[in-house]
Image (cartoon, rainbow, N blue to C red; front, side, top):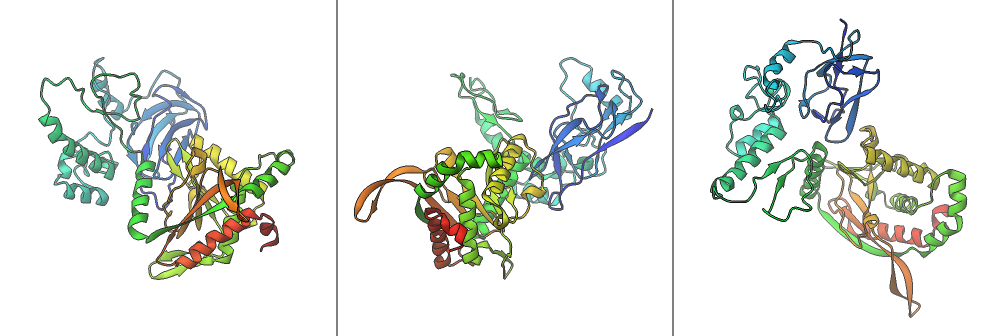
Length: 427
């Protein structure tokens, strides 16, 4: 028997923990080299763990939902084993009695169950604060962290259970209302017409991180938003004239986002403070233009980065955005692709939004919100005419960006879009 260890891959310096999602193989099943064994969710991306060697899954050490750290051992593969013959190990033997009865519940993650772990009842710093605020003891909370440590997620769940307990106790015993469900993923409630059902869905790490960053942004930035409207007819005319040749030449459709990116870079060059960030009492001016593009994904909002966008052509921008969109949909974005950024663009228009006030993505100091382009009545030369209008919104950190720079920056974007030749002539 030759065992090969399966470990958690290296995580970003800013990522301390990750969560195992769902094992794709069971003990005793054949495994091919480089076959994906499990996905690991961090607060930024979902990572795939491939099999380091071919063989048979001998042992799963950390179960679905377990909290793990970089280089932690999570499974073992027997490179000489045969499918159907799982390796017997102490951990597997201990789990066997619990799994024997047909109606018995599934065994808990290895790290969460034993009370004899040296770290059981020990709360991690982020968890300890939550427990203290809710008058909870770490000794009474089942930890899913390494060696039974209580993680932030464990503490949040315990606090939520405590908050819901009084309401549950006060409910009449004979009430026909079904109990609150705690599920790992949203459950469709369509077709249920009786009982006023409810469901409790734990936040994913990514969703929790997005929530944390948005609250951080609102708490630490002095956010203001300035608005303007742009006549999209010149861009639409250019796009309609060249879109077929563009797609044939570059293999990608000519969309509107590339024009917005170019217009944003054009304005950032004129007003560098819009591309800056705050570091303590210092303003950091960036000599490069890394534009974040907010993308909705099944697991939540992600912001991949177009690096050196000022050096990219319209075709390169469209190709990269298409690539990021596909990766976001499949959960394949890497940490590197979402790290950094000096300015962001959020396109609510794809969902039909008419107007919004986007939230700054820290540590950036400004973000552009673009919306649905609709035919509207506007006045030109004293006459009412119909034009395709898009409302632009730019939120900015008033600590370092004055209203003058914000307004003029947005006007520069408007002028570039209404006269695309400016982008070519750098006017």
